[in-house]
Length: 427
Image 1 (cartoon, rainbow, N blue to C red):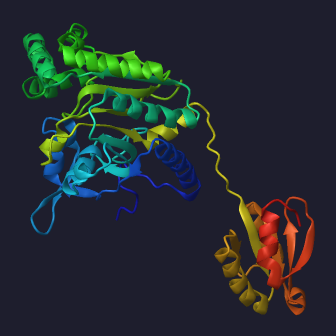
Image 2: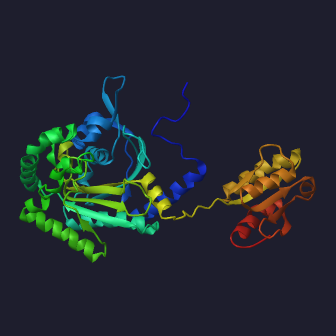
Image 3: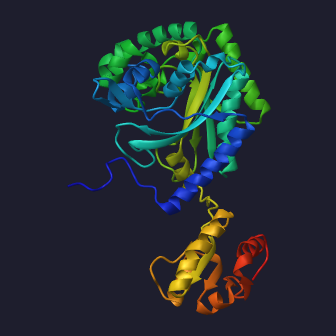
């Protein structure tokens, strides 16, 4: 019997969870300032959502999806990425009819991809993502990139590199596609089996191949930038201009194509240059995907988005020695001695919690000394003591664990007194 977590998954234990919660709170605050609203979609979708949305020629669809048949014989897939799922929800719920356009959304999702687990790349992964649907303004592309950069910067990351490219519109991509076929065809037998297939299905993805990255033909491949028509070139120039106006430095990489079929126009990645971060440097990837809503049964609606891996973000923070400010202190710990005091402690602890005070108590039947040790381990700011003597006088003793000062307070004023102390006073 195998009772371990499945390969490619891990448990996030209580101490680590607080780091995740802090990161999520920072991101939510930034999204609120950018006026993005949260969306939550099902953990699984009909398989065709990803086949049509992500693309049949991608590694995700061909090799990495967790797909199964449910009891009704329907093909179901655990979501491997967020964009197709969000666009499906956008179409199904007719958000394109909202009077407020564009629709600006963000999400926190668990994704599932069957790939070789390695540091920062798991089979169950967590992503923060953003999707903007309903605007073809290049300023929206720059805004989405700015949002991602703001997240990293406000969390303290400094070793960042933004790389951008343009994949052009349909006309530009068609011309470029033909140029790539002509360029790589003489070298077909020298390419990996995946790239041999890509040559006919989606030649742009050859540029994204990790196996053939050092092949001489990669170095001499034509640049998409040379095949942009006037409208696409102008669009890309505007995106770059907006980034410059926001003082966001960037590098143009003509080989940046991203791994999903739905991208067009702006494509971007944010990478970590931190020493010791690892061979896989990408933190965030995204781009524009005009036409995806049509693929999923909706009206022609332009869109742009990105996905940010939370696990990789944590690794980047660790590589730059950035401490996440997590408060592990407990506001107060209730120490009770004797059967009657134990009973009253249950009522008093519940009353304190109802009034917004963080409090815990002993549930192991331990002696007073052991309860104080527990309060110390939990970094309690105050200890409330209730024994037979206190019960007789209907008071509780409150002790500051920082100063050692203590005093008695009537049980009827315990909540009020604790509120006053937690707002800045000492016992």
